[in-house]
Image 1: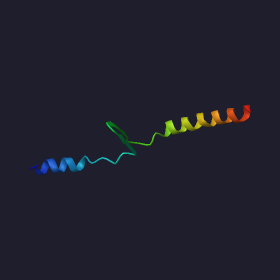
Image 2: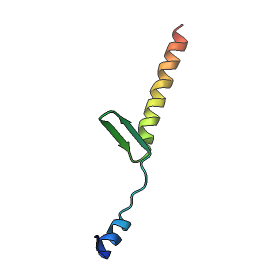
Image 3: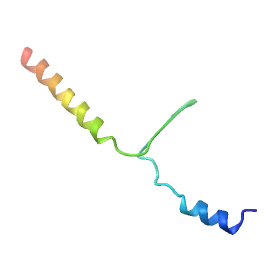
Image 4: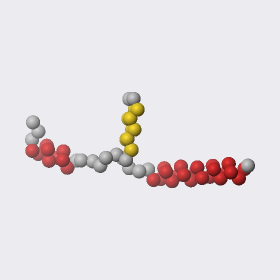
Length: 57
């Protein structure tokens, strides 16, 4: 049986749920926060690549 102090400590340490959780077979990945910089960089690269493809034709 847990003591009262242990219950209080475990109640204080509750974490927010992860932003993204992927489980596939034995693979498990959890992303805690939104990766804004990564999303911005990927969008910028996709825009440049799309523009190059569009204007080359």
